[in-house]
Structures are given as C-alpha cells and as structure tokens.
Image (cartoon, rainbow, N blue to C red; front, side):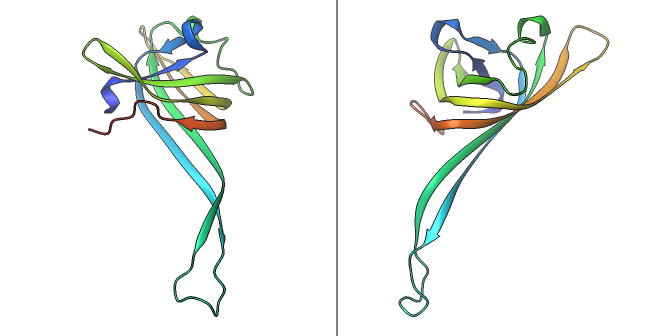
Length: 133
C-alpha cells in the first residue's frame, strides 16, 4: 500500500462515491488500557485493553467539487472505504463508519479544488484485505 494509489470511497456498496486524488491520508487508532498489576505484585506493569477508537484525515485534490459538496458536511455519518489500486485492480484496504468532524475546501484559479476532511470513527475499522508490502 502506498499513498499514490489510495482513494477514499464515501457511501455503501454500489452507491459509493470515490473521492479522487487524495494527497495525504492519515489514520490514527487508539485504545484505553487499564493496569491490572499491583505495585507489590510484579516488577513489570500489565494492562488489559478496553475501548478502542480511530480517526482519519484526508487531504485531496478534485476536479468536480459539486460531486461531493453535499455528501461531506460536518456532523454527517458516512461509510468510509479506503481502496488501493494495483494496476487496474481495486481492493478494499480499510472500511468503517465515521462522522465528519471538520471539512475545509480551498478554490484557486484553475480546474482543481483542494481541501481536507477529518473523520472520527463510529464503530470498528476493519482491514479485510490489508497487505503491507
């Protein structure tokens, strides 16, 4: 997986819309931990994992802003699928549901619009076909 061939698809199944030309995609995962070792029991601390969360930011270049302007409003819940392209083959790398926390669009002279979105996960982020080659 590399940044040149990663796209974000918003929606569900066949009704999804691919946001073309993403420049930078960052995915962050976190989890809460609880220490289960006592101060007098062990030299090394031990933890158990509790709740998890994920977030994502995406910077993009796009030629047709009208195609996505109504989809990605702050506060909207969307399905996110990160797909990778290897030649002509597209495969799902990550998928989940998220809420749009923030959107920023910039319009300059020419045909491209640029901007960014920040998403916060709303449930699990799964990686059905992830290959880190």
